Image 1 (cartoon, chains in turn blue, cyan):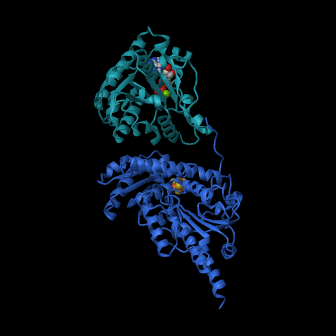
Image 2: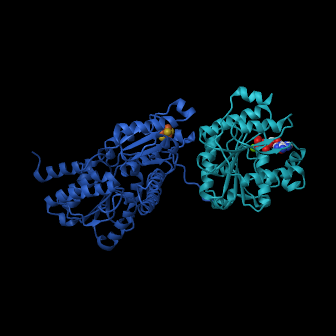
Image 3: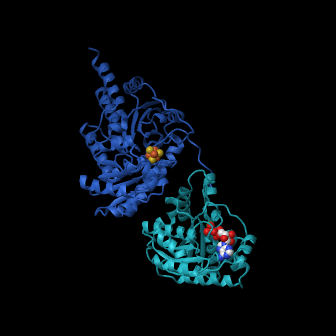
Length: 375
Length: 264
Ligand SMILES: Nc1ncnc2c1ncn2[C@@H]1O[C@H](COP(=O)(O)OP(=O)(O)O)[C@@H](O)[C@H]1O
Ligand code: SF4
Ligand SMILES: [Mg+2]
């Protein structure tokens, strides 16, 4: 018998929401939440930006008592008429799972002639990766993904869970959210380092679509370094392998790479796919040990805590995260500056091009004043 | 795997489901079958008479401690090597016993490799199907034969009839009705008529015998403690009937008037 994990008291990402995002990555046209109308409301709304419809069976008090088999089958029929989907996902919630709702029966009742991914999930799992895993298992069952992709994802999920336990949101009993360091100060410091001719690494280790914004930081640094004639001092790394991951994830990598190329940003090292942030950190670590040990500073964006400190602890590290609870653990790891891109995720849904980041915009503004002088 | 029997016995609380289940389990074990009994009642009293009166830790007891549960922690070998498992549950009036059954059954399915090798698995379920959780074994596709146990009295028949209503609602077929006697007049005839009226059949008539309770008090089944008794032979016949039964039908429940009529 293994010992129990620490009991964490800050609220964390939900497995139900994780299932929804995974369904989106699997390109379902509609996801149906089988549960109360308010469940996962914010994400359900945001996901519509990404072109999928998220609807609910809106179980009420009477649904809790009498079950919602009929409600679910009628919503299934309704969405099939309204949206003509080719693939549907049905997602459980705490409420429906506690009362023992079966998803397969209403799906059978509805009798649609398209595949339906049934995810019996609730929000009571310690790690939200469970929601991803349950979704992938079900997708494997209905043949939406193959065994090989499933096994690959499973390894990534296990690693992602470990990364969060080591230095992430699951590393402490309570983590207070923080806005991090002032963007203005940090932007100034990056420019100063460039101007002094210091050698820098710009490492993007982003999770899926968040790459649309984290990549902007690589772009901004490239622009400024070029104007200063210092671009030879900067090495870019990014987990932008266009041949890895689910179709939607590859498309993101492709779009971002396309934009980077257009903006003249050369990525010297591709460290993995956009869903490989939990393991790409080790690739980064190995590359640094082999080739870039002598660099003076590193700007790490996305999931900076996935990069081992072994070979970077002597560098001045600037971390850029979108998790306010990630500031403290990053500082403890030894990252000197930590910047939070607040509300990054919503801005990266439904986009196909790189989106400007606050840190990027701040750097551009400062550099402009510095290089062109105040007007 | 195809020939594996996975049965559940439903019936009014106190009617004799657990004692019938454990005696059938013991009788099948004597015949050389590999048997497992899974007690789904929060009272956790399904397997006591197979374990010489010993109580075993339940799946939910262990899950509650937050430890990782292994097969050895929850599967205990009783009389004739019958594998005994108790789901357990919260104290009466607290939490959600139905959810408990769902979680425990899933845990068991995930960690118990032995289940696949069994010839017979008996789910001993609580008296009333009060919520979704209590039919989890059926809904999760774990049960392929359902039986209803009743006496010839009005209330147990009423409960049996309700259970049939529930079973047909979840599209589950009934493999037979077992009469556990409470020494009512014309009892066998009443229960046989009930069975036929709902579209099923009577598979056994178990007489009421003091020896069942005497053995139970000492922590044994009659198969173990009184193998030569007449009632032991009745359980053996029932065990054989269950192992060879391949009929089932979706039950049609009776209206209350018809039910009263039967017992008049
Ligand atoms: N055929 C029988 N003859 C005598 N007593 C019986 C018989 N069947 C069951 N009993 C007794 O009835 C009581 C209730 O039985 P039990 O199996 O616990 O019911 P249930 O599991 O349906 O709630 C027990 O004390 C049991 O020994
Ligand atoms: S408790 Fe569970 S079901 Fe209810 S709103 Fe929250 S996540 Fe949804
Ligand atoms: Mg019982």
